[in-house]
Length: 329
Length: 308
Image (cartoon, rainbow over all chains, first blue to last red; front, side, top):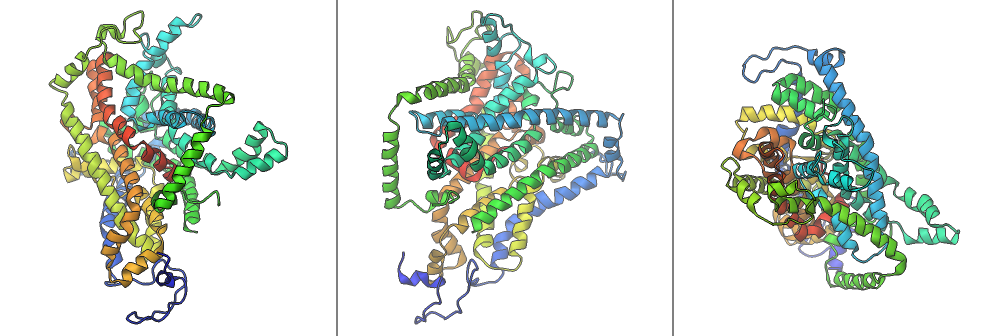
């Protein structure tokens, strides 16, 4: 494996009988493509076809649909220009009212959930950082809920928070001075089952990210800090936390994106109620499309929402590129 | 050693006897460190309490499913079913409008097809993008990468209208094809391709192997672990997908996780039956997790992959 014959790519190849001598190249992943010059394109073709059909074309098609009055039962789809967009930006129309109301709901969910998912994940990762009996068992337990589907998780937490008979209310009933609460049907409180369920469900993802990052912090930094007289808090504040910055940023961005696409939890637990206070943007878009068959209006909404999300995903894209640059080095 | 050393090298390249010895040493060291110390007791207690809280909903799901409907709401609460029964399971499995076997098959088949398809597609696409030189290589990679930025919600309406045009509503095609060209797998596999030493491929080329043989005999053996991880994640993503199957397939074509919610509307607050349904829907993934736990958690830490 480390014989001299395989090192030839790095240095100028020594002339050997039977091998055509090629000039040494710098860089490059492979010196040259053997055989048909079309070969790389043939490998790329299947993906490229699907890529055009299911990614490039649909974006254009969505814009096209949003500028027409689309009726799936008719052959005639009249052009209406920006009507469905202006409707979303004109106060007083039902689309305006509910789009921005559900937008507010989704933003509220995101603003509460994202910090929770960061802090709880970091807490769990720190608890598990130093060796302790059963460490891999604990890690598996905290990660376990992430593999469940949103419908399982939703039904589970709906049952846990059921108004009189759910386990949470059974426990509240047993504790002195607390009373059962109608979580699922009270405005405001209906977010509690959704948020608790979401944290339980997804905290394991960020925990694993943090565990990996914690393990990668060089021990020497802590030794240096200890020599400087740092206590536990100072070590965390001046060594751990700054070292975790990239992961925190990554986790914050991906969690924000995931939270903005909230759909299944309220769909299963509250159906958006009471009075649409837990309805998310995604739920409203699907209601417009699949309940009222207003596909053009729904397309306009999802594009507007998508452009707003693009600010966040663009940020994530830059993070990915930075990782990519690192991987290539 | 740099803190940023790519962790995946250890999973792909280091699998020889030397690595195994290193692993054995590590285990021994860990075991020594694992000796309980009294200082750790509070942390251990806290972790145990948290573990109980995390497992409580799953425990409650299983025990509720084993109670009669009257017992699920009985007071005082039954922490353990007074008379354990499989009645709920029998009722829902025998109910005429709930083809659980069919729903399970739908989920298994489409998730498996999706996972295999995306792994094959990712490997085929990442191979030339990482190990061949040709015009437009960087351009095409950037195009694929840029598509990662498009928020998923934008595709919902156009994909649905396309499925109507293709006649794919209520078919397996609708659950398999649209998600296949996602950029993530290509991006991930390309990173792994790059980590394989170039010299191996050179040697095979000198022996007269063509690009297909190089891929199959030289490169793929290094990619088994990342391919398994990617496949596992794509399987899970497809199995747990909710929004898309909810609207594009109906009735007996539904996937299991979606079906249990639509089916639940019939049993509204009959939680014994609902929990039996959720237990049936989560058993396959729980079993998969038990067997492949290592891949799950390791895969997570090296990809930063995230469910939506």
